[in-house]
Length: 345
Ligand code: ATP
Image 1 (cartoon, protein in one colour):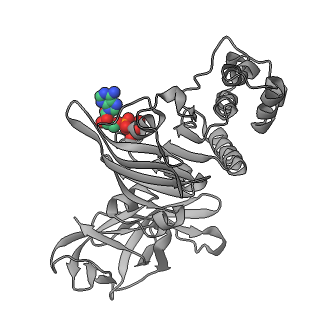
Image 2: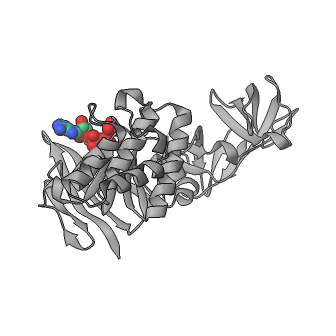
């Protein structure tokens, strides 16, 4: 049974649709990310779920109960925003205890200490927000959101103000805590790696709608559209011409399903790790040939950029460094493409 259900949500601002009919259903304990480019409606969706914004149409239900008309402070939802939004004149402990105090929860001190421990800040209970790092402030904000034992946790870009290392550590922490508490969570982010890393399912949004809602692996390996393929993960686009059952890229042909007319100008979308490579000499002979522009060692992978002979396309290639052939700049190479998607150019 779904625990949080968004049905037919619509919202326009000044005649411009921000949400164009959003349906989404989260199982109890599930973490779903809303992922999409700036302006696609993620935050609007979250604010409607929280009760900070009123939808033009549609409903929000929690555990089968319609909460569409219920005020935000009666929805039993915990929220963490991008900006830390702690009370500056209260210590970490008092910030966390605040929600408990409002609810007259018994044994507040013990509960506050537990929450501080949960987010790894037991030793900093007495610090004020300005004495805490950004990551520590977000931990306090998370603990404060969890203090009220919400039925649903809403996270709106909670990590985007933090530097890369802290961001990765804290997202793992959030996921660990969310899983251990079995907290139904909606997580808004524009960072695809973050969404893939922490979610049970990822909802990729475009223009106020869900383009795809699937597990991270499916969204990545079987994108439902070129938009999803290009938004999630690094992709290359190589121009070519449609043929029956495939695409011609100069002398090279790649097999691919597409519903396009033969002769149509198309783009072949391919992920860096789906490109094979070998040294090449002599005539093209049906190969997709190019010349290496750069070779960068990145630790677990080596990244190549290649200029294809047929045009000015630049294709990037990752390959495991453990098996790395050496392809210094200027090397002539033949590429092989697999798992391609074809879209109109
Ligand atoms: P971002 O990642 O940049 O926060 P988003 O996907 O969260 O983007 P929203 O904040 O939901 O997008 O905004 C969706 C659209 O609605 C945008 O075009 C935005 O300009 C518009 N919008 C959002 N809130 C308001 C508002 N209060 N008044 C007018 N327009 C708004």
